[in-house]
Structures are given as C-alpha cells and as structure tokens.
Length: 77
Image 1: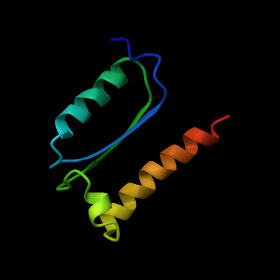
Image 2: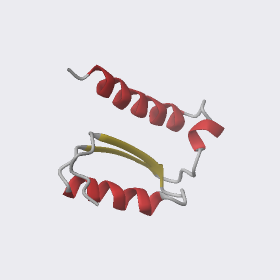
Image 3: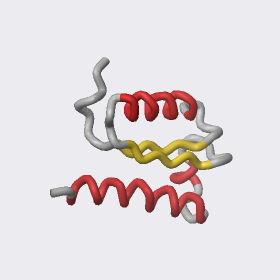
Image 4: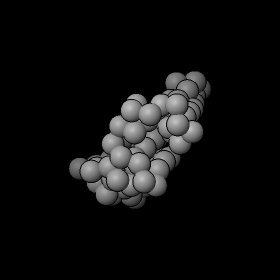
C-alpha cells in the first residue's frame, strides 16, 4: 500500500498499549514513504490512560500534544 499521499500524521501510544509495536511500525512506514510524522510514546502507559486518569500530568501532556498537532493541522495555510 502506498502511504506517500497521506497527510502529516500524529501518533500517540503508551509502551504498555497492546498496539504499541504496531503503532511504531506504522509510523516507521509513514516516514519511509516521506510522510511527516510526530509520535508520542509514553513509557509505562496503557491504552486509554489519558481518558482514565486525565488529571495526571502525563495525561495532560499527552492530550496537549495531540491537541497541538490537530490545531497545527487545521490552521495550516
């Protein structure tokens, strides 16, 4: 599958997430295809950690990261 036409991508995952390795492999494939990738890998975090404990500093940082990426994407001229 040709990934070269995909837009810049933000991927966030915790190291304990069941999809961690898959997410990292996908990010690598995107980079190989020339797609700009921003990746946030959170040590010790599990899937959905940011919604289960949103008040935790690590969750707040993670949420701020994807919101910033989304904002940049929507406001890109």
